[in-house]
Amino acid sequence: MANTIRKLEQAAGEKGGQKAAGEGGIIIGKKKGEAAPQSRTDIIKLRSAIQTLCQSCNPLGRCLEYVHEDLEAMAKELEQWKALRRRKMAELAEEEAKTEASLFGLQQELAMAEQDVADKRAQIRFFKASVVKNDGAVEKLLASGQRRVRGGPRVCVWGVCKPWYLLEYQGI
Image (cartoon, rainbow, N blue to C red; front, side, top):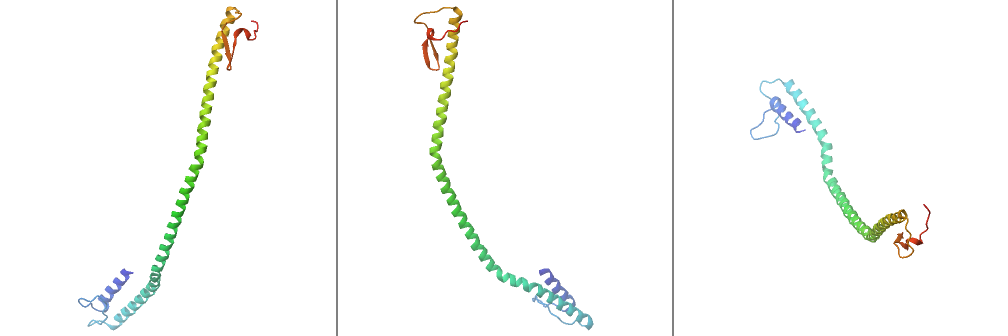
């Protein structure tokens, strides 16, 4: 739009008039020796260009009048969204704190259960080792063919220890 105004001013200055020193406006006048019909067509062209410019600028001017109102409305809406975000962030932090508090007891219970499982697995490994050891002792005794009547080695199976002679003897 500014370019159009400059072009119009230049065209008016070159064809229809002269610029006064220190003035930035358009001076319409006749040059000596210039034909009237050409300057009249220039004036008509200039009028139509100015009319087109005004028709283009008037809606823009009306829009610019409402820009400040729109900016104020947008600023209010932005503040509302920021306030909503702050509220929701506070609610989120509160809910996270509640969740952590409710999970604390469950996490302790889980840790205790995991410790119990580890203890039971250690106990099972111990008993399996004991069974393997006792199986080896029983195999040695059976292979040697000795039978002691009393006071022999004790055999432990699943936490129950008995003298070896009380175990059921299955013939070889």
